[in-house]
Length: 302
Image (spheres, rainbow, N blue to C red):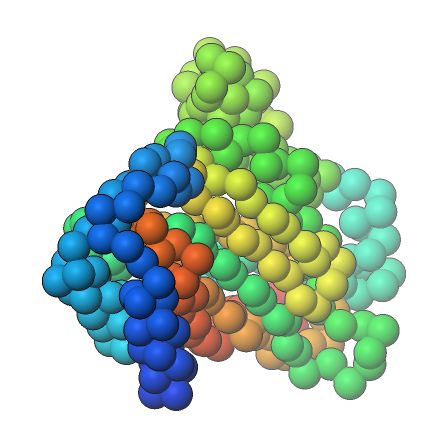
């Protein structure tokens, strides 16, 4: 298991900041102070009054400042080999996984990728994007490390209707198990509560329950069975301060592979409520990090 935090700064480079300043200056000249406009912010459409010139200049200075100074993001990956977990729980591997492990010589790992965006109290993210590229030391293009399960996946977007700390787990077929209980607005209420009343829920989980920060958002997911994986959260609520996002992969790793890492491309659009009349111009701040995936030694895997 590995949990190595990396702190990076998402920001624009000097040329991009200069271009943003020019675009802002052009836009400023188009705006009419006191003019009402309808703007869709997180959650609902709002009517905003374009502020006086002095306040307009202050707002654009703030936006350019955050683009240049950047936003701190802490990111880490935590891995867990799943075959030893099955063995310790005395659970028989499903036939297809047993063949992949014993005959095809693959191992399976769960990897939780977490990134925390640190924003000033009055700011919130309009969107957050995580793009991962898997890298390993395999010399055989056919036998490359790849994800066989993603969470959240396309089928899980229904869960992102409110902001809540929920739970999920991994079952005996290496599928992600998410709760389907509770009120209509809370379909992912805590598995732990359900497990207390129904032992079969807990028994069905080989790994978990694990916590997950569900966020009210429209999300996009791409990349199962591909070396490149993509999640985008278009936020629908104004969560200020620290925002945590988590993505989970189950990786199929050839046993001859000794090194796996993820090239993480993180992007965030920070905002304030009084910036929303310039929503289309708010910059997406990028950052990159390389996140290692800790593997067991070959002897441990046997």
